[in-house]
Image 1 (spheres, rainbow, N blue to C red):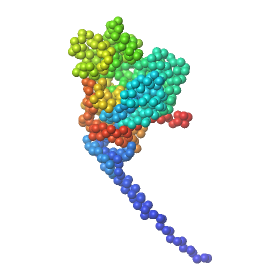
Image 2: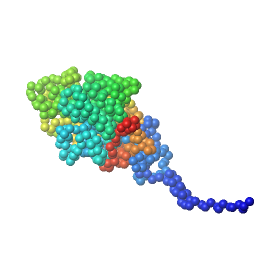
Image 3: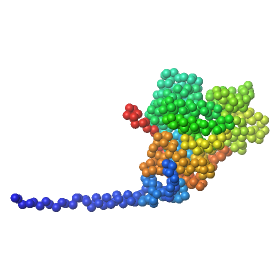
Image 4: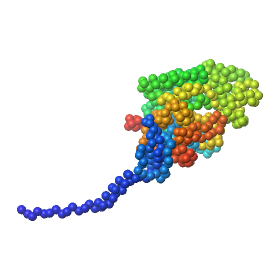
Length: 577
């Protein structure tokens, strides 16, 4: 046998010491990290409904990096003391008209100061696209003084324009049924049934919008031209929205005497088209209808038990905006014809007594003639903004008539709305108990029915624009105890995010986008009243959007980290799309 050959000793792997050092460095970095922001000792309202707990939260880049009930092993480039403050996921405004103000007022101050980190645009059937050349010219006139150029015609072009812009909070868009119908049939059409070609054009517009990233379609069935549309038209278009997993949000046909029938129509559309439906600024107007919210919520609950998905939003105030002569009967209202024509009708002496008589009938007037926004009495209408008489702001029309020594308050009203500088009006036509029922309901979310407003000195027509979210926290959670702080975080954040199929925001979880609000639960409250002056709320200390503070120590930073969120089609649609 040959001699046994000894194997050479195994050489130590090259750079072994370096690898060990690298592993030790990685281990140390895991134990001690550097974050962009660390919020320490905050009371966490994580959006799931679990009781709030004290913890540290770290932000790195756009995302939440860590949540720890023990002191975090790491430091932040910026450390925020959250002691005594509550940390919630960012709030969602489910009903805004920020479609154009996203360009003109990019900081969204009126909403950012409330803790809003996402707004849903394109409500009440109104969207800036699709748009005809005639309507585009009106948009351009409105925006010319702000140096905003309307470059789009279709919805994809509008989305591209938004995406190129810079703004502070996140935005999501819907396509408006009124815009779609006006583009296919004309804005002032009274035609009920579209032709096959017109219907095909509407289908194409909705499909194009959904493919461009729209979160759904809205309708405004008390405005023209949607006012003339039939339920079957809406069902057909909602089938397209449902195919893409979007929502159908609606300003219903009636919010007074027709309230129950209007909710029935929404449910029918949802159940027939299989679309996720959402009722905008839900309310029961005028005393004869107070108490109906109990029934409408029950109708939604029963539909949902059958398999539908019907929800609503509301603004937490008992007054509605009734500007522009909205309490007028429809045959004399500028909402249903060009304003010049309406002014001629109102100024005609032969018409005035008839107009006044029908206004006094209020809810007793038939549905085809009844005004868009009914009030029981001119005692219920307050003037928050009166350009010619600022000293009279905050008073009712009846009070102003007495001060100005006008015998007939209705004559004063008609003179006001046909003046060169008409005042804004709000009507106290809602019931506090209905409002509180909506606060309690898990089906109801919050919508301000406002837009982005950056100039605090600008006349303000309704406190909802500045205070809707803080009043829920301060009045209805802290003072009245109608819902818990934990339920408030769900109502204002996680539930609306889920409604929109957004599942990487709305919870305080590692890996989620850092849309966060740090507020003082002992002091948070709205401050704006009905006197035409705007005030930012108290108690909102920090607001983070995509990991960057837009509100810091109670002041707007002028940062613009907001982005246009786009809805994604369901997986099966992507495969065939």
